[in-house]
Image (cartoon, rainbow, N blue to C red; front, side):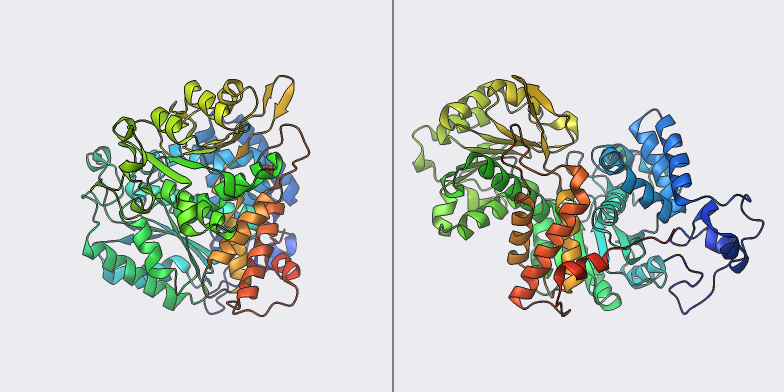
Length: 552
């Protein structure tokens, strides 16, 4: 990676070109020979540092920052200047840094993006008003690099904070940081992409410093034509690309995914990623309790693209375990702001409608307008929150669930923390330690009745890096349901059910291990289905070989 030759026609870089290239720059770690060869003599202090010395020095500066946002901005500065140092530092402190690099601190970074802007971070900014510039934009941003992974967002539906227009590009940058840190995907082969289709956030439209298009968000035919041109152009430029869609809106996300997933390796993290992690959490919980998935009753609170996407994935797991679709759907319920979803509601989206119930099923259908009433009526064993309605999982709801099932599975997933439906310590207290809990953000262990409960973080980063790596290694023609199911089972299988207070998901500190395990399972599923374009005789070895090892 750190050579003097860039990826565009073998042109040699020298001097400040090298120091200003984050994929090549090693700063004070350049050796005397490298300094002579690359024209760096006299451009750096004389002492040659090791990567460990650089990382120790950077970590001390990191610790001196007062807030998590300041820490993230400092790490972003290193990322902009020296990818090798950044990922070495991240690898050394992965559990500590992830909440700063990604959730929940990334929300603060996005909300302040225009005010704090200093560097485009090698992103491609696509302007909906100029579709003629799509190809040039992608070529300029790639700068001759072979792009294997692209994360694209229009930032309409960032979980927990909503529509942030062009400022949401930070979510694509952050996702790609995690891809490299967790799964070793080469950072010189990835590209973050922002589709600037306007914004409906009034505060941004009124902000003279806002860096995006100050116009109402476009969701019409021109928007979908723009997305289609982008996808087809990207496919032509990068024929082995894995395409990851991120934080698109409720009215566009599923339509876009369904348009391309049948003929290209395409992934939507909000629709599929969270669903895989929650499926793994359910499987992990059942491994602890010894229950059968076919006996569970599943209730979603929050029926946006995340809530419906999660439910669809868990529903598929019910069916894979032997239930028919009709039998599985009888065990699924969905609540949104109007209460339990009923099939006579004309406002339901296409994604919500399959989960809507008939009013004739309930004698008190007219009363099922809030979560508490629905919990009492349907007696769920699994409760998943994607509502961004803080405090909505009340003591009454938790107590009601405990009365109906020995070990309720309660997963408040909304983030950031201030939007959690309930905090894990509350759920464990109200359930007398009986509930199995996963949260959407990092949570410290909870001690209750002298038992330490480790709280699993149902964060997509547990699965999407390995899913992407396995797809890239196998060069799968598409991302199949079988590959997705393999990822969920690989993750859920890492739970240690023998330990009291064991989490339903493995800890973030095991991120590299779980990403490798998921990647192997995903690549194996692609081979088993015959959809791999890359012949693989030893899949674990191929996964290991594909992981980026920076040159220090």
